[in-house]
Length: 167
Image (cartoon, rainbow, N blue to C red; front, side, top):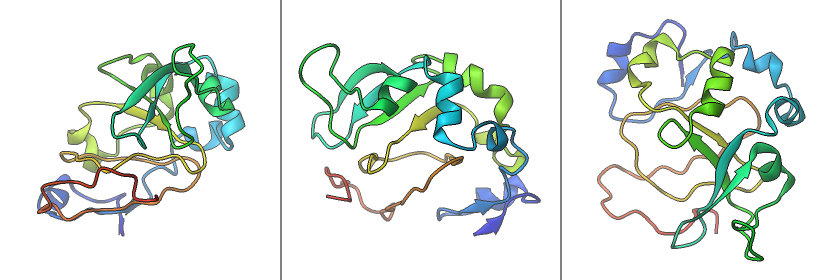
């Protein structure tokens, strides 16, 4: 854990290990605008995105809204098939940047991480939801509400497990 408020980008560039940076979100208006998930839903229930079921060996997505996802409506595109309880809500700049644009005045990329702000991804997860093992290039993630458990695999591992680490 490092206090990220006075961290220089060059000090992160040489890091070969994940780093937890603290102190970077305290000034974000998101911290006061969304004290609870109900606050977020009240402002953004209609925002569109998709829910992705990561517990399947074959990924399945369904279009939904923030409100629909958080209320548990995970029917697959109007069918009787549903996504698993571990499905997570996503939206990103490539597919639909409208939610990211709505949230843009609620946060700012920390100076030490600004060079990594290439693609914005907004993710919401209900209790016990999550994402299967996957790889990233250098990236950063901030968490506003709740808790998240991280399972990390050494970069030398070439084949990632195909299941959720919590099963």
